[in-house]
Length: 244
Image 1: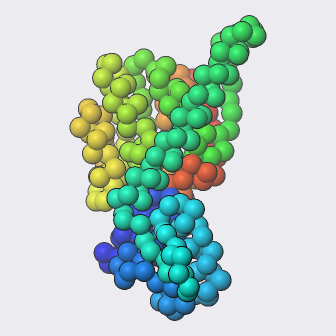
Image 2: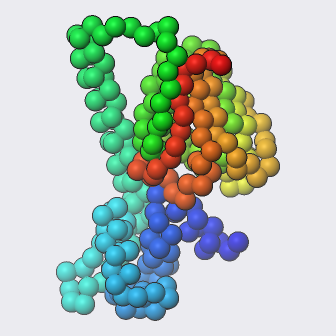
Image 3: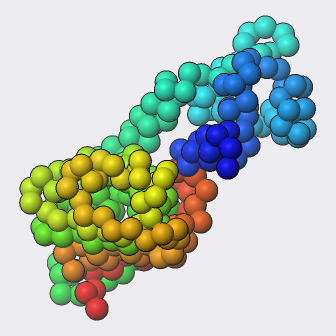
């Protein structure tokens, strides 16, 4: 794999489509361009380039000029990625705020407790999985055990690392199995520094499986198929509080 391919793959892992990653990389490397040379360089149609540029503009990665013909300029990489992270963080904070409001309303309603009944549910997006995982981790007392494909460690490094540090800081234990070869090691460096125990499984791409305190589990078979890190990406994750 060339350095360009590696760079593009990492952009895809950060939430861009393959076409957006290729277009943004080209603009970073060769400077501002109009759609015509972009279409020629990327071996596609002008209409396709326009759609791709619109997506990059919406993500804050490209700026159009006011001149005619319009020149499209790549936003500085560090600025663009930091903006993307803040957008995702804002979405998660909004979800957490809604969760707290609903919990307060539930207390006021005095719903009948259902602690003695085992339940399950299907989580259908990365955002939903992260919201439930963060909420569950906040209530876990002893241990979080996991087997995960590398894409899950990338998502964790962006959205879950602070909760991981807080859990380990209050005496919790985190153990998981994943592929820790390059470049995946970069995604779990902070976990290791925080005190998580990690075991290597070469080229692991199978089931994602979490167990919290031996009581609650989350598992999925399709997380390894994710092409990018995006809160809106669809997944199918089974959550249950049935120990069996």
